Length: 243
Length: 243
DNA sequence: GTCTATACAAAGATAGAC
DNA sequence: GTCTATCTTTGTATAGAC
Image (tube, rainbow over all chains, first blue to last red; front, side):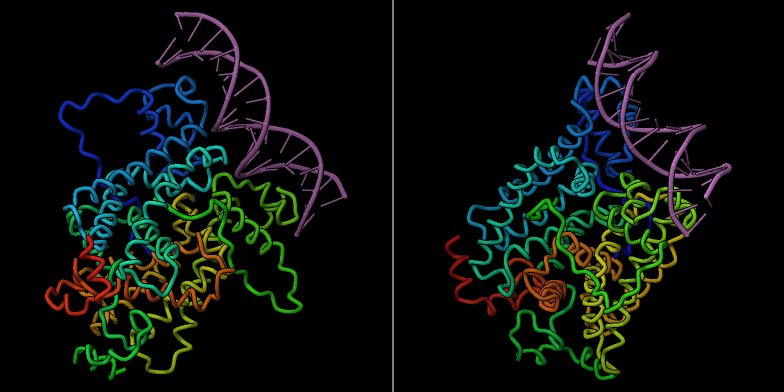
């Protein structure tokens, strides 16, 4: 269930347009407009007329560039996924040669968040329309999606082999949890409350180490009971004692 | 970005109908049908005719029970939220008197997951249609939503005061992260892969303690560098050394 | 490449019989 | 309470001028 603050859309980072950025070709204008509208109004209730309006053309003109709504949807899905995948690959690639798995995992997390939040229209659109587009559009988008899933499974598999990852559940489950936790912030992230770097560090901390500080009075980090009580601070012990 | 396995819907637990469950009143049939269709096909593309069909009546008859699509949406939102809130309150209430915050937090997490997965049509519908229903429907649903947010903020606030919660970010951010991570499983949970109890324990473990086993070679659990290397297993050290 | 005009289907909602 | 019938609007998509 949702428990966000406001009903309004989160304020998202926008990609910084370089100096003298050339006006996008019409086809791209259509995709940009479609992504924004898909994200904010949903797939079915976004009309081609509205997309055309936002792109500065008339509805009929869309059909010169796309076969129809389905193809637009598939392209938006691809663009959103590719933006995130590219950011992840970039961040991993920027690490020093021979960086450990945990560092690469951290880079991937940051890259995913960066891509999600800096291309929010496309990535939010992806998350929100994926299950509602036609089968044809989903099929067309399949390969891009599979490749990204594989990227994570490979990385997480390495982490598991290295003993970095918790081993009390399948890697696929960890991936599902992880991606889910990383996708949600596009709904509520607000860049006015701090830098992206700080935000990413905070999310990474929660993903990697959880929201509870180590003290294990209920359930141990990884089913290895015993070493708990010693680490509990006196303040905590007091609080628990009071009830 | 999404990286689920299949494009198909996750298989969700259904509430167990007791023996001799009376046939639901027509109004409830409509809500049940609407929730399922909203969750699977989205809000805009679910037609009143389809809802009526699934409820075994004709489209015109819906207007005897509801003002229109908006009111149906608001009722589905309320029902989904209340199912989860009730489950959370029940699990917390079932604890022994004087249970510590961490135990109550764990009960809340399990309750949220239980409600989400045992009333999947309503809860998935909630998550997926919330931002697309009319302002009127959202306003009407507002109080229920606020109450649930408050429930979590109170609980997390207590945990923070007790030193159980990580303190390097605002409680509201932890709540957003937490709820997001707990909402996503409705997209991919598959009861055929294990009991709900096991699943809940696994998710709780990741939410509480993260996906990385404590070894802190990159970022410490809560910005307290130093005590790291000593805890690293030899297997991990070897893996990191290889690169 | 983009426009106008329009065909055709399907939506939410209402009226009134039963 | 539920039905049938229908009004009105709006959607995707196409045709052909410019």
